[in-house]
Each structure stands twice: as structure tokens, then as C-alpha cells.
Image (cartoon, rainbow, N blue to C red; front, top):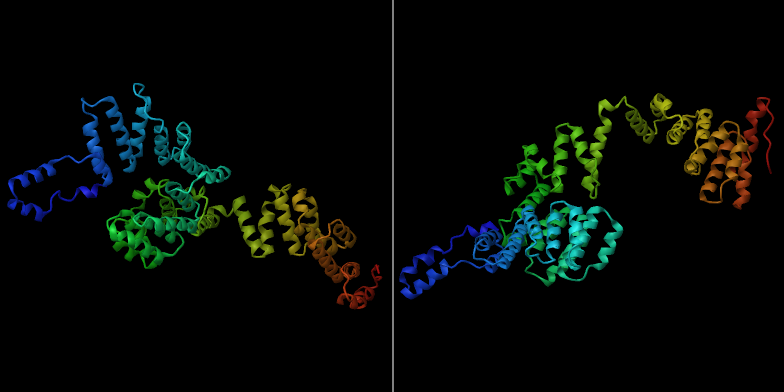
Length: 495
């Protein structure tokens, strides 16, 4: 953009040899040097700042016709848009819409929508683009708007409307990137590069995709192609610094980009730089969350990341770390959610005595809560307190929980251990034939054998046509000995 304007108009050697030229040649050279570049020349060089200056000079002239001023305004908005000055471009388009003396072309609605999209005004952008002509630009913009709105069905429908043309394929690749489908984006960019070797900027996009895939060395190789031609590109230099940071350390990255001290120097000056970038650059939010974590400001870190929907591993990890820090905060220990979290932790660790310690302290708040009772009953049963576990299991009203195998298996065990094998048997018979019913029958047989109530084992053998009786049946007489030695009659058996 502005860099092309820093070079002198005439090289030192050319100005030094001008004394030897003929007067006619000198006059021609001076005339060429003093000639004002045309708009086309500025645009061809992508010198949009120079083009805007030229347009402001020629477009505001009192001698210019109304149509000339309209054309100048359209080109000024075009240059402002490509300079990233989307607010200025939007204002110009809105002024053109308000001017009733010479209505602008219908395409201006689409251009206005593009400005609104880049400013994050997605609803306004959709309303504007629908007023414009139905063309591929409209389809591409609606495609991106559907992604921003999270409308998956509409996104897929608009995907089908894309054509095999350069602009549509680049738009599709960008959506793949935004949805973390980096390999699909790489495939599109590489295919376009094979047909258009001079599209050097695509190498930056490919390098960025490889960076997201953690292929930092490959990203460096691809990025080098672009840096050979544009060594002063801020985007490419920043990406190269990020690769160095991942491959080596922060010091190596700092050598590549001196201005990014916020990231590479452990967050110095983060509060002066990063908050203004949140919402515009995705990495700004993540870096600011990391800064807050390092400062032990868990509350601010949580406020920043709580609404983030992770798409890549480091986002999942960062959100998990923040949530873990919230759960470990001392101020939350004696709250109801804090005690629930502690109980969940001990439940996963299978330390059920500790689970009951926390659940007993809050059970009065969840007397009719099926989920709480389900977990509470499991903990009771795991500590062999089957009588209370059975009572709590039977309090559950949720059909979804009651139809689960976990509920049925635990209740079956409670029935058996509480001396109610008949009810356990009836619970098994109420189940449909499935792998779960087979597992429940095995559990029933084993637990009945433990308390010398032998009924399920023969049924297991008959139902599943076992070639020989289960080994447990051979121990049946011995299992009766504890009962008979205590003066109890042997249990009834079904043959």
C-alpha cells in the first residue's frame, strides 16, 4: 500500500546521467516525470492510498459532472474498502443511497453489505445484500453469513450454489478454514496455485493452515516462497515469528518480530494491546485468557472464554484449564455447586466414602432430583449400604434413568443383597432380550450364588444352551453348608 510511495521517482544513476541527454530528450523525460499517474496505474500497483488522493482531487472539482462525481465516489469507496477502512466505505455507500438526484447502481447494495459484514453487522449485511442483484457475490456473502449465524442447513444449501470459479473456491476455502477443516482448505489452495503460480498470497494461506495443523516446519517452507517476494509483509513476518516460537522459543520469535512483545515476552503490556483486538482477531482472546491465568485472575479469564465454542485442541485445553481453575477456587468449596463438583471428582476416582461425605451435606436441597438420587444411590450401593440404596433408587421417577442398564443392574444387586431375589428376577423378566439382559442375568446368577439363592444359574444354562452346567452349580451343596450349620433350611431351588 503506502510502501510503494517511499521509493524515489527517479533513481540516482538516472538523475546523474540526465546532463548528457539532448534538450528534446530532457524535455520528454521531465514531461513524463511531471505527468500525474492515472487511476488505472494506481490500482494496478494496488496503491489505494494514491488512488484515493487522486480521486479526492478530481472528484471534488467544481467542473466535474454529476456522473463523474458518482464514479469518483464509487472508486473512493472501493479503495477505502481495500485499505481496510470499511467504516468510511460504508458511509460513502450510504450517502450514495440517500442521494435521490442520481440513484447509484443496484450493485451498491452488495458492496454496502460487504462493508457491514467486515464490521460485524451481520443482520444489516444480510438485509442489504438481499436488496442487491442475485449473483455469485450475493451467494458468497450469504454463504459466509450462514456460517456466522451457525445455520448449518442453510450453509449446506448455499454450498451447493457455489461454482467452480476462482472467487467461489476461495470463499469455500475460507469457510473450511473458519470451521477448522484445514486440510480441505489446503487442497483448494494448492489446486488454485497449480493453475495460477503468480497468486503468491495463497502461500500465506497454505502456511497458516499448516500452522493450525501444528506442521510448523512445513509452514515455514511454504511461507518462504512469499517472503522471498515480499520480505516486508507484516502478516507473513508475524506468522514466521509464531512458527519460530513453536519450533524454538520466545527469544527466537522476538528476533523475527520486535513489536510483538505482548505474546513473546510473557504478556508485558497485554492490557494495553489485547483488549482492543478481542472480537477482531481470534488469537487475541486466547492470549488475553492466558495472561489472566498467569496473573491468577480466574474470574476475568472465565468471563472471556465462557462463551467460546472450541474447535481446535488448544482451545479445548484452554477452556478446560479455566473451568478446572474455577472448580478448584477456594471460595467455591463450601457452595452447593462446589460440593457437587467435589462429589463428581471423587465419584470418578471411585472414592465413594468421600462422595457420600459431600452428597450427604446437600441432599436436603435435592430430595426430588432424579439425577442427584441416581448418583447418591450408586454411591450408597458402592459402599455396600444396599438397603438405603434400594430406597433411593425406587424414589427415581425418570423413565430415561429407569430404563438404563446401570439403574437396572444396581437395583437388581440391591434386591438380591437385601434378600429379595424374587423382585430381582421379576426385574430381569421385564427386560427385552438383548446383550444387556444377558449381562443382567449373569450378574443375577453370580450375586444369587454369593448368597446361596440358586435360581438364575440353571436358567442361564437352559436359555443359552450351555454345553455343561455352570461351575457354580457344582458348589451348590457346599454353598448350603453355612445355612444348615446355622440351623437354617436350605433355599428352595428351581430345577
